[in-house]
Image 1: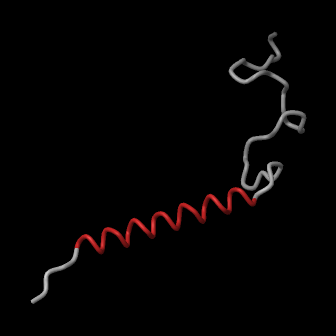
Image 2 (image 1 turned 120 degrees about the vertical axis):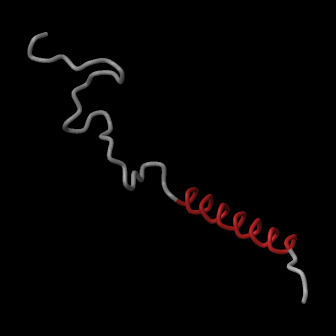
Image 3 (image 1 turned 30 degrees about the vertical axis):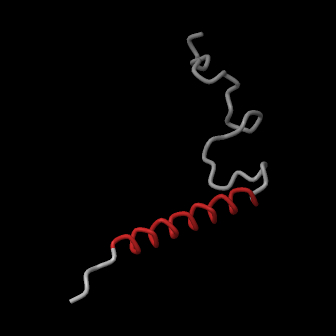
Length: 63
């Protein structure tokens, strides 16, 4: 019975990982900078933004 060639299997996994990483990088570079696909955080100037800087509490009714 032949023994498994673990080196070949490992190389194939590494190549698959590398290819997947390159595809993700290529897809990321094709996106435009203004494209906020799936972003849940509102940007400044949009409705719902209270104007407080990050890390500072918003002025409430008691302020």
